[in-house]
Image 1 (tube, rainbow, N blue to C red):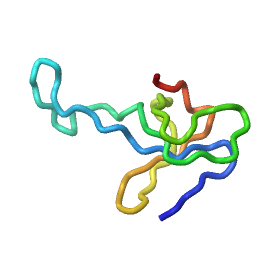
Image 2: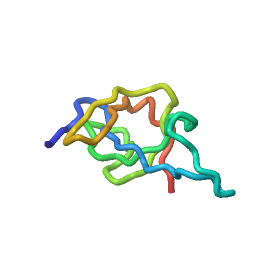
Image 3: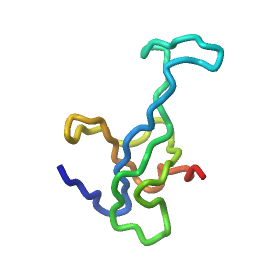
Amino acid sequence: MKFKPVGERVLVKAVEREEKTRSGIFLPDTAEEKPQTAEVVAVGDSSNGGPKEGDVIVFAKYSGTELKLDDEAHMILDSEDVLGIME
């Protein structure tokens, strides 16, 4: 399904997180925090030079609206919730 955000919003998909720590301890889903990094899937009408498709971003902890597209979890974020772009 195609989806294009409206205005200064971005559609993101959470980056896969490690299921175990560096020391080898496996973490259950209930022990993990909500991810704050995601890959940008689509960008709305942004003229301020924000993130582009394919960028990995860091966003505010309790931001965004969750939705499912093609049975995959995505989020829509306002551009002001994007804190930075990973390089």
